[in-house]
Amino acid sequence: MVFTTSAQIHGRKLVDLLGSWHGADRPSSQLLAAAVRHLVLDGRLPPGTRLPAERELAESLGVSRTLVARTLDRLREDGFAASRRGAGSWIKLPDSDRDNEAHGGWFPPESTEVLNLAQATPSAPPELCAAVDRARLRLTEQLPTHGYQPHGLPILRERLAERFTRRGLPTTPEQILITNGAQHGFALVLRMLVSPGERVLVEHPTYPNALEALRGLNAMPVAVPMVEDGWDLELLTANLRQTSPRLAYLIPDFHNPTGVRLDAEGRDRLARALARTCTNAVVDETLVDIDLTDEQPPPPMAALTDRVITVGSASKSFWGGLRLGWIRASEDFVQRMVVGRAALDLGSPVLEQLVLAELLTDADEVLARRRAEVVERRNCLVDALREHLPSWRFRIPDGGLSMWCDVGAPVSSRLAVAAEQHGVRVAPGARFSVNGSLENWVRLPFTLPDDQLVEAIRRLAAASAAGHGGGPTGLTAPIA
Image 1 (cartoon, rainbow, N blue to C red):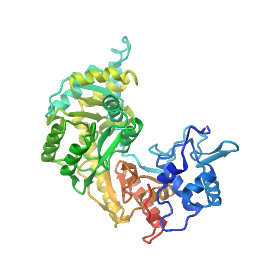
Image 2 (cartoon, rainbow, N blue to C red):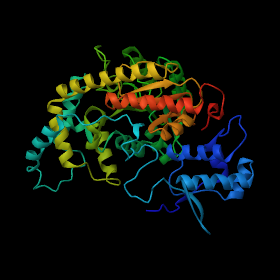
Image 3 (cartoon, rainbow, N blue to C red):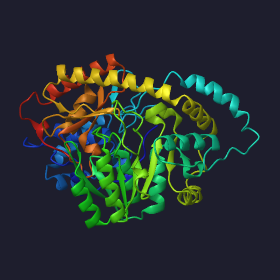
Image 4 (cartoon, helix red, strand yellow):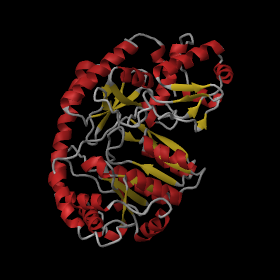
């Protein structure tokens, strides 16, 4: 398959995306091509995007047209661009004529030689197959029906409501809506509550796909910086008061990507701030089950204020292949969501819901095994980083599936490009940023098996050494 042009990026916008692409070095086609490749691999320059004409791009960048022409030659040679007389040039992916290849953004590589550290997603638990067998038997009960369940299967909603209630948040099945993942749930809430141009408060850094959902709606993110040990609640409260956001998107349980958890006192302060400012908040509990401590967990945010809409997911606790999540809110809000949902989809798959319902019957055992495995892999990653990248700084997270690492210089986007060439994929800090900053940071999940984790860090160290070797080069310049 050859990507056809679908959208055009103007020279000024491409310049904004490239940022300081050559740093203190003299502009060259090699540096410019590397910067464009990064934008493609990072998902910020989608395949099919028509590039500006050579003259326009040269004028926008302030470089010669010859340098731009050589850059396009390099991109075509590397498989990142294609051209046709009369149609100009557009972005493509290497080997993109093969339908099953997926190289850019968050898509996992097909090649087993590339170790994927861009996705914090665990493999399926061993209990899944038995749950599928049990669910298959229950499927016969559903076959005489039409199969559409816009609210979700009653049995799954009941079991999720029971889990919320046991956590200290009394919940009925009527307060649960089954979705196709937490991201789908967030998108449904956004569509109902937020109009284009309205403000949505987010933590900074935050989950990249939530930012994509905001961009898709043309909403305006209001970024509140995280501090070293978590949330600056005074600053967050001031932003709620001064910017009057239509909605807030928050991850208080093992925040993605930093891994910190908001304590009970902080949750109480946050709940009071939401109530005082009459701000509704979507609280993402995707990682709430990946608690790697022996501490008593703080109460769910929704137990402290009725301003909270909770979204959750089976992807981190059980398996992403189930593609199931949920919304927990008031009965009235859930009913309104069901009515509005019909414009997008008509419900979630029945068999997968039955499988998840079966997994929830043994959830304590499944999650205990999951957490023990995650602890081992987290410790393995810590040891590998201390051995191969001893200058990197990080806080060992108390939960979640990833570590937020300070690489010591504003190079993470360039490092991501170099790492890809060494056979490992990482998510640079800019992916978690509202404005393309956070170049000193990179997120490293600990979801791969131990041997693959160690090899991935070894390759990352080689890419880091090859990229800047501790001395000042073009890699030390931040890019958007």
